[in-house]
Length: 231
Image (cartoon, rainbow, N blue to C red; front, side, top):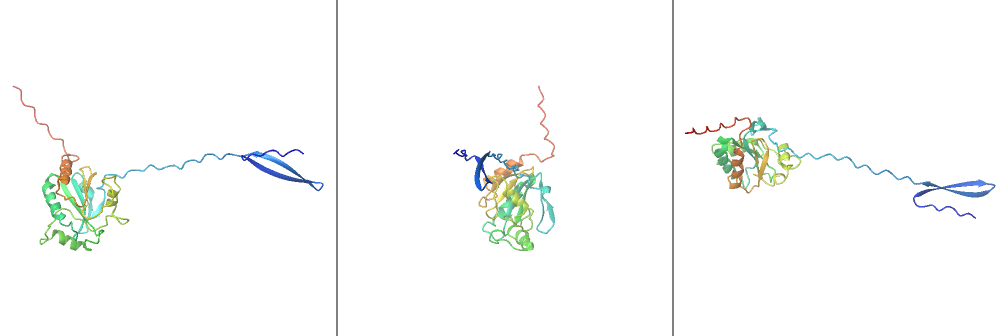
């Protein structure tokens, strides 16, 4: 009797039973296995880093008037999330001092009150404004103050989402009130300081002063001093 052909694991075995005269005959056939084509890797979308240009939003100020942050481009800007009932609320005073010291050179503080941390901010913008700016306030803030908003989590304002998306060490959500970011004259965020770093510290002032050295965009170049007369 003729043995059936050997079938390897890479072949497909086809079995046909042919019945003739009541006797069964088994016929074996083999078919080469087809190798599936290699999987095509899924296309990858390049990750676009977040823009450092953050003065691109219009946000209501403490009185509800929409303010285009692009208005402050060309100045050196310190952005901070503030709170009126925080252990660091005293920084309103040093923020005002720093603002007064450098504003003539093109520096501004933009304060964004928030109750994200233990609800340490008044719910009503009128109360926030009175606390910070009234004649009987111990802070008498004169720099721009914006309406209360969220600075972290899914409800964070897009400005703070963009700040959080920046590469480290600038990026990351604020961990407490009075986190501070410095923006250069081009509108690019260039530095971040923790809550515990006072606005008038050497670290913060060094960054501000260095950024102030850059000419304002569109400003004419300084005229070189005339050469001394020979003689």
